[in-house]
Each structure stands twice: as C-alpha cells, then as structure tokens.
Image (cartoon, rainbow, N blue to C red; front, side):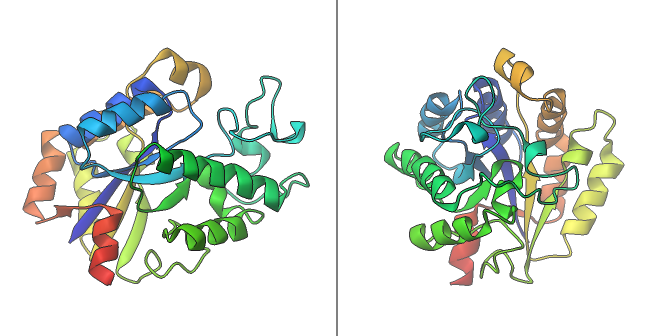
Length: 258
C-alpha cells in the first residue's frame, strides 16, 4: 500500500515549520500543505528549497492570520486578523451560515493565496484548508472553481473529486491519537492494522515544535510535539517497513490513477 502522511500548517510559524521538516527528514511525513498568509511563510520557502522531495499542497486560510486581500471588517477581529473557526464551524465541524461570506471576496482571497505560493516557486499538487473551511457550505463552490481553474484535486468528501473520492483512497485524521502524550505502541499498531486494509491512504497530522508565535496564537501547541515524537519514533518506522508501506505524495497517487 501507499501512505501519504500530510502535515498541515506549513508556514504557520518557524517552530511549526521546523517540526514538519524534521518529521520529514527523520520520520514518516511525506507531504505538507502551505499557508500563504502566515508568519512562517518565508521561512517555509527557504526550508523547502533544501528539501524539495517533500510534497506541497495549498492550505487555504480563512480562520488564522491576516488576509492577503482587502476584506471588510466582518471577516476580521480587532487586530485585523481573520475570525477564528468557531465563528464558521461548530465543534463537530458543521456549517454555521454567515451573511458576510461573499463568494467573490473569498474567491479573490483564496486565489491570491494560491498565486502567492505559485509565484514563490512551489510546485503544488492538491488543495485543502485550515480548519476544513473549504468544506463549509458557503465555500464549497469556490473550492470547486479553484480546483478546476488550477487543475488541482481537493481533499474533501463534498466535491466528488475524481481522485480523493476513489474507493481505493481513504483519509484519516489521527491527531487525537498521535497528539496524546500517552499514545503507546499498541495504539500505533491499531492505526496501521486499520489503514493497511486500503490501497492508498492519507494520514492527516500536525507535527511541530513550539515557539512564541504558536503559543500566542493557537490552542493546539503541545500536542504538536507529541505528534512529532510519534511520527519520528523507531516503532512507527518499523510498522511502515513491516507492512511494506511506501510513503508517497499526492502527485504519486494522481499519477497512478492516470
């Protein structure tokens, strides 16, 4: 089987970037998704030049950092930054309808984020989003348009994507397991026993190291350290080897289907 281990939030901060790169160099991370509007973007660019084998996708942002375009105040907090996830999605990630989520405004913002990444020289192979905002009822058609415009598949169960809705492909979010300081080898083995039933799997993860920016701006911080620890552990690398798993990128999966 082939396994994409995708680390979200590349570009969030230098600490997060460093943790992702280390989990690629010394662990099982094979892909990442980049945030164009965040504090660590330039740092992520320099790091990726040194490690071009790490797959890169676009992590569209509407709930962190400052926008790249001129958006009205309804989108922003008192610091001029995007409103946070609970404004748009409840704890189960169900849509909360907001009148100000204008199609053209969001399309222009997200297109600007994609263009910034492309102009920086990144070769991107898929689209997803921070806090899964591309699955919000008011943004799905925008995501579909951008996907078609740039010829990029989307990590989503809503858009009938010909790649990622294949019966041979599953997406799993194991933050709840890998981010737990008490995760043991038995828990890791359960993960691999499950995913080895499929031909192609994406494991969504969030490794990172802690820095001041992360601590001041995200409630998900120490969990990233535990994810890094588990993703670079000797045991998880043994599981990959024993199960004859090939670490892959989204580009690898797309090539295989064509």
